[in-house]
Length: 469
Ligand code: ARG
Image 1: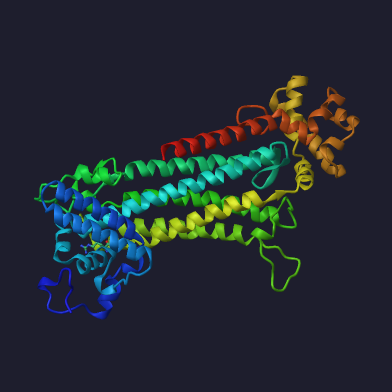
Image 2 (image 1 turned 30 degrees about the vertical axis):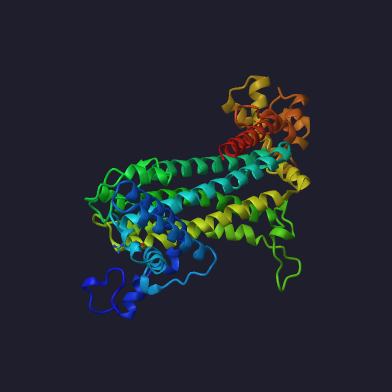
């Protein structure tokens, strides 16, 4: 059978393998809400402009609502013969309301239709992701506030560097998540132009009002060029790149959680809620959720690559290649949403082992810089010289196999006679972090203030949102 929707010049139906490669309904049914919303806006505008009769518009509008209810309730029978969500909806509309349904597709094409649907879907998803990221921020800030003074080793090159606080470490991730939200918000701004009315590629001879449909669908304005309207997928690419960066951040935290949970580090403990056991090794408590967050990043970065490569070299305007935009985008953004939720769950669940962290914080001569800074401040040495003297102190401690603050005063004075007992004050990890009061530094008072700033910002944001609804 030739196609019911466009089969005028076709004598026979497609080869089975053609149908197989061509049909997108299995995945683009995800777009049904957006597709129906787009059609409702379009039909209202057609009637408004006198392009179709008000009576037909009413029948179409009611019919579209009925189709939506059928899909919502799982009663809709999707047909692969009808290729995609657009033709499935329109065909069912014709069954429900008769020939008036045929007027819906006036002055539009599936090309501008799908571009509109997909934009709307990506926009809705950005909003969901933003809310999920806000929740993750909340989790990070709350945990950071309660561990503003919990000392831990700070690393560079994964070598003990200087003590920091656990709260400070978590708030580094809060900064990343804050930027992720900013990137999504930027993408949303540029996304928010409506392609509907671009028609197949050239616009239309009907007197449509593109501003009306754009406005009805919550877009800022219609897109200015019809060729671009049907062929642009920047909005998906930008969202995927913001998603990929966000996923990379989650993956870094996940990696740290995996390391921290190991017996060798023992920095934090995840409860039974976020770990699994081993079927053979009874002692095991595996951080599977963290591992899976780390791994999901592969799919998300992969999706960005996939779409970049699909789009590369496509001539103007629409090409069926673009049908391949949806599956990776759907998969990546739902994977990201799951990864964010799992990360927020783990952050709330994890309990740092304060004692173990403190012990580790003092290892690796982590307060050597504090000694050098003391020599500069109190003795008046140039920093380069202080660095050298401190290096000799570290070597002396290493030779004895003891920590820097356990080195006897005579040993220190043998290196530089100007060192006094006062120096021991700065050699403890607590004193070290407390002294880091420079803006953005790890001092507990800074961390507490930063955590509270985040929490206040989030509360304000939630109140503004609630007020806007
Ligand atoms: N399923 C198609 C897609 O996702 C809809 C647009 C089809 N347009 C066309 N001219 N065949 O891209």
